[in-house]
Amino acid sequence: MNACTRLELGLADCAQETLPDTALALPVFDSRNAATADQWVLEETPVALAYNGITHAVMLATPQDLEDFALGFSLSEDIVRDRRDVFEIDIAARAEGVEVALRIAGSALHRLKEIRQMRTGRTGCGLCGVESLAQFSTPCPVVADRTRVRAAALHRAMATLPDHQRLHQLTGAAHAAGWANADGKLLLVREDIGRHNALDKLIGAMARSGLPPAQGFCVLTSRASYEMVQKAARAGIGLIAAVSAPSALAVRVAQQAGVTLAGFVRNGQHAVYSHIDRVE
Image (cartoon, rainbow, N blue to C red; front, side, top):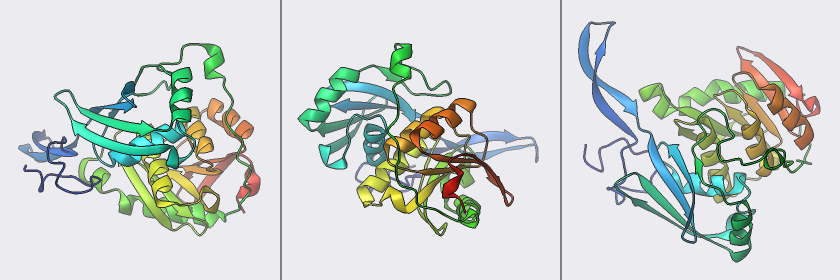
């Protein structure tokens, strides 16, 4: 595929033609029709995030919406606390993957140096790079906003989320995180092969779009793990609705952070594990 016909959903334009494809058409044997045919396969690429020349993390991600990803990761990992602390984001292809270079404010760089650690993308445990129990137990900020939404809004947002999952429709391999207003209308959706990355991309897109976290809620196509709750709390998101189950640790973190955590939001049913007052 050439740069302008490959599957490239989140990049600004075809000028970034050296970046990896988002998905590739590969010959695959399909047992249903006993034949080999091209099938779209989602890409997973190392993405290095560097701040003022300091490489901080290497994540495995789908190479789309990388500016959103870089900003969202920076906010959700408490490297920056305001999008205005990120002055510039440059994206460049390298032989080994993609490098995203951010130029950030001096105060954010000082904070980064205090918490700096090399991380390989969180694929399941969520603790890669955490060096001590004390570091793990650092409390989340508490979300004070108590905006209420109707349960029907949760189901409306979750039911319409698949319509916005173009990558998943094509490959069957992408998670999604969506942002809905209080009525359940989806305003933003981001996809990635990693559920944490999809949420980071959404947080970054919200920050770039100026969407206030107090005026809606987040829907997830994955289970709700503790780090997903942490990321949401740091972004000021007070309500998370997940299609699958939470972990017990996620529930405890949500209780402490003032986050309403709903799981199994599907088929007209749901379970609310913390701060039920936000759901009418």
